[in-house]
Image (cartoon, rainbow, N blue to C red; front, side):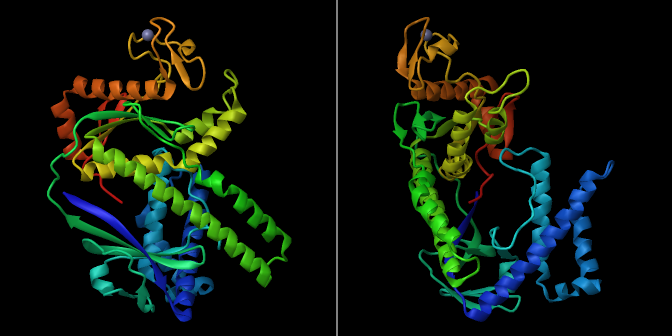
Length: 418
Ligand SMILES: [Zn+2]
């Protein structure tokens, strides 16, 4: 099986190199924003479709010929094409309603994560120790190699975060399909009080990296607002704000990696609720017929969900399980917290409080999150036994993403990315 993995390091760029990277990012932003504007126009016009990449790619040539935008001739064309491919992908994800995909947005200078992608590494770039040679007028750059790069580098991305340039190498390597070391299945209930509760009763505490740093962030933002805009003090305060944002992202990523590694190492099959965060955000406000209850509480909940990166967690579980030879199964989430795992009685009354489950029919009492996790596991097992475990497993291994039944999704194996 092929493992694709990313390796990220900080770059030590010279002033000239930084300037050149900024220019390349500016070109990319220009192309993204202008292409997006034309897509939006098409979408607003009745009977028109949003153009696909093949069409958009021709616009680059036209812009280079146009006297107003002929400075694009100086641009790194491969990267411009990559940005249009990204835009095409973003639209497709938006139209297919992929869980966390919103409508593509304009990129504002300094407000987006600027990046340049260098494709076809073997042909256009080179690696020598902890130095990398990049095309488009950048040349050799040293990077802080904190760990070894595994596999063959296919392409790399240079991005600007919190005052520094970083390089991320995307690699591929072929490994033997791992023999499954872990056995047994587990269900996971995702929550706010406990980030992940397992059906065996264990759980991981929440991180709330955002909350923990919120106070520091608030102070830094306040300090920034008191400075004269674009003054050197303001710039320093702004760098501080960006630094805190960057730290929050790092702490959260470490936390998610630790949690997903532990779970994927110890279990062969992991069942998880098929939660759609975007749906939850939409449903909190409710509809005319069914006004949303606890809108405030729910919007707080939604914020916490996004803060804790459930989607990222699921993505990591997916590929880590596949690396270990296991698989991830998503099951429908309906009533998992209201169903008694002993007698199957479904009632909202079963859940006396947020934390406590007490079945009104048979008297079974348990922590509510553990009950949720047990029900998720039972559904995963039912899903597999309905389809036949061999069939489901085979389908997963061949296709990467299959739907064993209309109700659930099962997707481990070769849908690997990092
Ligand atoms: Zn019961």
